[in-house]
Length: 161
Image (cartoon, rainbow, N blue to C red; front, top):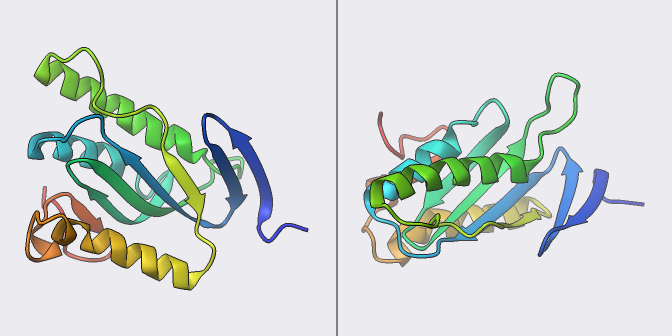
């Protein structure tokens, strides 16, 4: 018997676990370091679905990788949205905008993301703290509240506009 409701696995290059009413951790690397303006583009595109298709607890776009913790919402028929569709659509949209600005031939994002179900509250708290500390650990700022592309639900952190 599964620990989670409606649990199933599918494979791209990586295995992807899905279940209802769970918190997910997603991370993906960038093909190259992003400038601050490019990080803002990706940040805004990822947050665009917040509150509709998913509820983001924390999101951090660093120059070389992006990390998120969130819960997926359900559509009108009660089926959960596929998280890879949400992430990949945001990456595609941001990638096209960045390619237009930089005149690059390829998106700065790899096509697949690493995602996993967070197993318990302890792991969720640990992942939250790791994501929150990312900008400081990568020496991008001294205080997470100063970092523009870090967003925490119900907290005054992130881009103001």
